Length: 65
Image (tube, rainbow, N blue to C red):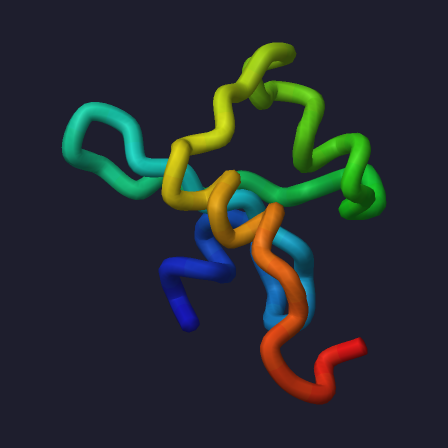
């Protein structure tokens, strides 16, 4: 716990963890976590892999409907 206390982070706080240059960087999250916030830094255009598109287009095979 001393490391968390030194960083000003308490149990239950929301944090963001990123890997940068071989280090883990943990920062407090001040804003609520929303889908929009999570996707904000994602590329605008993303491509769907062929194997994923096959799965997306597949017909139901059981009782999943």
